[in-house]
Each structure stands twice: as C-alpha cells, then as structure tokens.
Length: 359
Image (cartoon, rainbow, N blue to C red; front, side):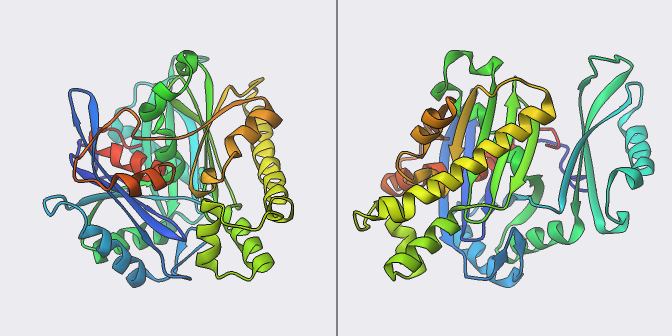
C-alpha cells in the first residue's frame, strides 16, 4: 500500500520536488511550533529525463538527486517525494464510522475495483480518515488516493539512486496546499475561514489546489506551464532555451517583448486560471473564491499577481514559504531570494516530517 510504512511521525526528512526542468529540495526543522529552514537546493534536470510529470530516465534523475544529497546534512537520509498528473486519483468516499483501520482497509480494497479506473494490480492505494460526515453522522469521510505503481516506483527508485531512503510518496497537490501553515501571516486575518486556491505554475504542469478551514477540498492538474512562455521567447529573439529562461526572470528582453510575448502569455495564463476557478465553483457549489496564492517559476514574472487582482478581482499573493521562519546562517540568502516561490511543493513535502497522517 502506498504509504503503508509511514504511519509514525518521521523527523528530518528532505522534501524533494522532481520537476521537468529542475529538482527542488527543502529541509525543515521544528522547535516549539516554529519552523526553521535548515537547507535547500535546486538543480537543473537533463532534457528528456522527465516528460509531463513522468520519469523517463531514473538513472539521470538519480544523478541530479545525488547532487542535492551532497548539499544536505549527512545525517539526514530520509526523503519525501510526490506523484501528480493523470495517473493520480484522489476521492473522498463515505464509510461506516464504526470500522477500525484494518476493517476499513479490507472494505476499501473490496470496493476499489469500482472506484479506480485502472487494473488494481497496477495501482498503489492509500487512505486517510478525515472527519464525520455532516449529512450522515453514521459515516466517516475517507480520503482515498491511488497512483500507478510504476509512477510511485520510478520516484522511489530515483531517490534511492540519489542516495536517499524514500519514506513518503505524497500527492503534489496535497503537498502544495499543506503550505497554508507556512503562509497564513501573509494573508488577511480572515483567511483561515475563507476559501484559498493555491496555484503552482511549473514548467509544463499547473497544480490547482483549494483549501477551506485548513482542509483540501478540491484539486486539479492542468497541462500548462511556463515552458510555453520560454519557447515563445526562444522563437522571437533567437535565444537558447537556458538564455530565455534567465531572460524571462531578469527582464533582459527588447522593449517590444511586452506586446509580442508577455501580453499573449498573460492572456493565456489568465484564461487557464479563470477556467480552473470556474470549474471549482461549478463542481463545489461555492459562490466565490476568496484568495489566490501563486507559486512556481512562472509566478516570478513581474506583475502576474497584479494581473489576477485586476482581472479576476481576487486578492492574490506570491508565496514565500519562509517569511516567518528562522533561517540557518549557512544558507545562501541571495540564492534563496531568487527561488522562494519555486520551493512551495518541496516545502509542503518537508512538512511531512512533522505529520503523523498519511496525507
């Protein structure tokens, strides 16, 4: 079972976010309810090693992770990683409240065939009891998570090849929404009672995860990312891909790029977010979304948060997972400042060190 070994709290676990363009890692410690950033790292991914959230070359990814391993304390050997994309399914199901964990597991395995659209021998399952169902107190809400076993094993194999012991395989959207505990102070005071969307725009995939009162109530992955923006810069200005990646962050581009590249991408980005918000509202029955928290490399494009405020009328911020944390004096502050918003998923995974629950 996915996560079967991970029912006890595990301390000092590196959160590793394996993306198509880079691997990000975060190590947190905790004392008296306060977190401290002990270490972080970001390493580029070889082209083709990962395609659309699927690892194509475990050895290549393992070599990248090994570079990260060398930047972490030697004593820390455990790591958490996440799966995402079309091969991951999460559902809230309703089970009899009187069932024990072992009885619940047996019942879920019996019913899983009708819940999961894949052959069960190709799937890893896990579940977590949530809370009593408000409409029927005789039932308990249970979060069921399923992922293709090959996807889970590929990530675990990459960690192992990189010198880490894989301890947790999470779901990316849940890791992202877990960062609510790190950014509460950067949102208005009423945020805990409001509906907050976390939107992580990676190179090829956008994670959309909605939280209400600390609970994840909706998730969705979209095939859209900053790579489209970068490729447009490459084609317009005859730059290499790496040069374009750097230019879109530094703004070192011709004056007319605003009209040729930036404005069209902003329009597309806005359409993607608007569609995701509308799908959430339609599916959930909620009337509005209160706040948006942006993360990922694309959130570094100047003014992207202001665009959502102006066009959607929703209070939007760029995440800083470490705004309220003590920082280890050994950290490269300049490098951290450049990549804070890209470390959201890795930070959410690192928080698994302090959580006894499955997800």
